[in-house]
Image (tube, rainbow, N blue to C red; front, side):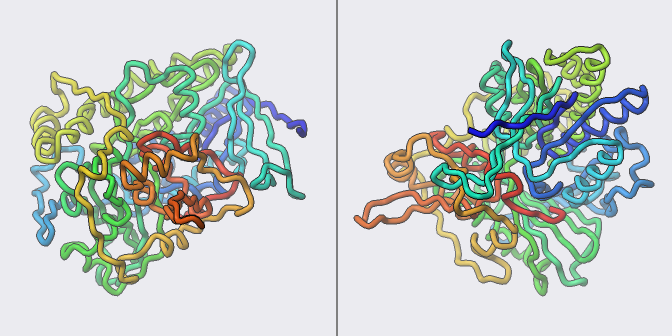
Length: 548
């Protein structure tokens, strides 16, 4: 085995999203203020900053303003202020608008901006580099490094140029070790290393199981007559049934662009459900389809979100490191927003790390970080919405009523707290107990199939490398998942990665089309037997989103 080279930093940040970049920026700001030298680097598995970023997104600028007060002067791409909010309840053919005065505060977007979060992240990267942060795109952190006392001492990046059979190609390069006094993990929802850390240090003991959703999104260039920059439309109801958590959005950007998407809670029960096909069907609704007539779809992608809220938030610290952003689960599902929370968490983590560094500490627990969070506006915001996701476990009707009572009537000051103990993967019911769902064939104009969608995600993987969708037991997909659940991986994956085919003897087998993967992590979350483990492929692979 080739010897890995190593680099030393004060702080290594894993993940170049809003949380990770906010951490790096704040560390360098504090170092400049105190005239100190602090070495900070950011590892990003995508080919460039923003390549793996996918979000709605309506952004609350509060945390960004705290981090970079002069963001407007510095040219941050928050260019489309929200001018109008609409909330619609859809039946199969009808739409009922909820008057704005009836909407809880969490659904109001005055003062917020419709953004392309990938562009915001690129801009944040420029600010970080200007402060002296080293940013390494195209490098996937695949291993946590520990010292002799069991504390995190950094990470290692993956080897490059490994063939499918494990042999080294002519392009082989061993991974690199990055050692740090503190390591910040901001990989996003269901991070590969974060999952290992939560398990190793039992960070989720006493917490609700984390709850996830899959977000599927398209970007459209619409007829100028349909463009209404600043308009935010949220919908609930059709095509999802009353027992399935989820909703959809249309966000009108500038330049005749409209972002359309759907979130489906991954605690759904019916294994015949396909989030991708539900989203395609959504666009055909009479109240929705007109926006896209005469338009053109220009981008597609998908990403899991953490939606469990405050009660599912794991312990944030462990010896030598912290969790930030969606890695921990700071997203506020009631507001359908996470970027402001990610930035705030990164800023708080950076301030705790800086104080530790100046006190000449290393690889201990940054306990000041969770303490600062508990006294922050972010904690207060999440506490108001702490029951939001749990109510939806009881169906849409009860959830709508109780969310209205909690958020509108009680202003988030409810005296009760709801718990749940069932992880998303355990919610799937046997296929024989559920109604099959027949989805209409795509027309190629308004609705599309998975393969043509994956094509415009710009995803790419070396077809000769080891498959990064790993199976603990290769027999389980056919013997259990197909036999009992009807092969749900073929439907919950929004990229056509999983396909049940017949072998030469007419027997069923699971074919994994790893080259299609858009790194959404849904399989890692929803697989009912938890047999699928998503691991990072070579750095720089996966989707290349542009301003998604």
